[in-house]
Length: 159
Image (cartoon, rainbow, N blue to C red; front, side, top):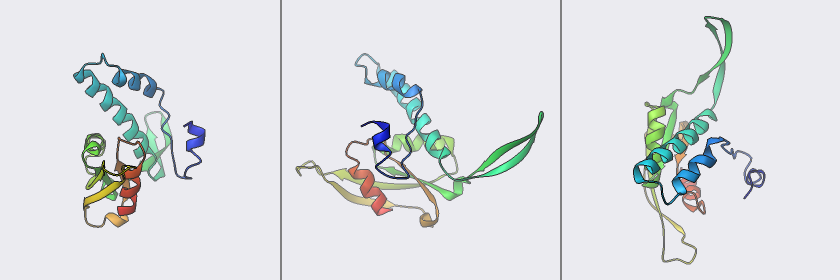
């Protein structure tokens, strides 16, 4: 699916457009990439994706004084107002990267698995553990394994 077509799926959909993706995906898809290299390139991919997602969170304008004079900047969200929710297990690797970027972020966990015995591999919800007051927080859903989006859709429904 082309990015232009994907944007029609939902008005809040944002496509991360880093020029680094193509080269990094080439590295992790290559059968000759060693496991340690795969982990390195995958973490770089997750870092770019996480930074882009965090950059989409609300912020406020802020004027600051730099050594060169005044500058217009932003105040980003307090990590205490954000909850990174991992779809267990694949989401845990992405969650780790988010926590490196935002050390004070709250963490939630959801366990959703595909039922391999059904024809369309429907997702099944098993478990959810969220921090108190999660309803008032912005959510970063950590799910790097997007195929049919069934688990992500179910996670959004649970949240």
